[in-house]
Picture 1: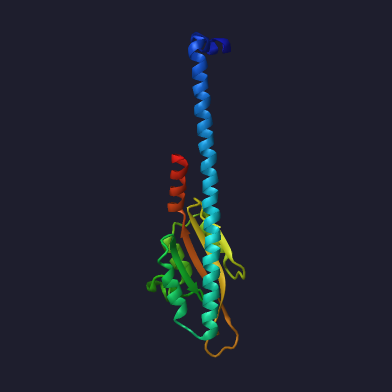
Picture 2 (picture 1 turned 60 degrees about the vertical axis):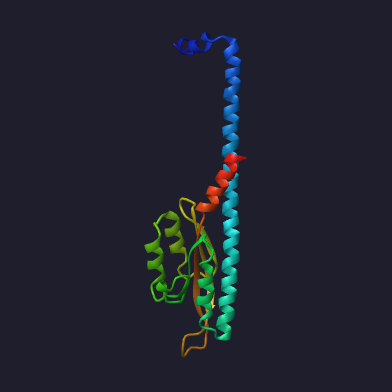
Length: 194
């Protein structure tokens, strides 16, 4: 029975079988090389986005804390407004201890609940839900990729000026969302055309 199924392999002359098998080997190796290069480029895109977001959030954190220490109340809004220039950053805002947005890329967000804004603007997938669960009262930064690996969410704790009548600094946090779609597309094209 098996011999009958393999009989078609021996029906072709050797002058077709050898070039055909070499062509099949060539196509297979090119496909494997493409897939390996594609995976490597996507990992580089993710690593670059993570390091870039860490730099951006650390800069914002430092600048906001410096402005808070100096009593510059409008500076956080100016800093987050300037972030809007970067097309890869989809969302960025500063949240106080009660979870209310106090500065944002868009002024419409100010005064709203941060969790509601995040959920309203995003398709809630596994990566975002995990991210939102972990940021509760966290005192360390957190970066999380979305489930489809096309979005990067960032959380950085920030020391804010004390509320009126209080002496101790209050805690807040920075949220940033970076879109990886464009860098991924560019990396995929580079792999395809090289």
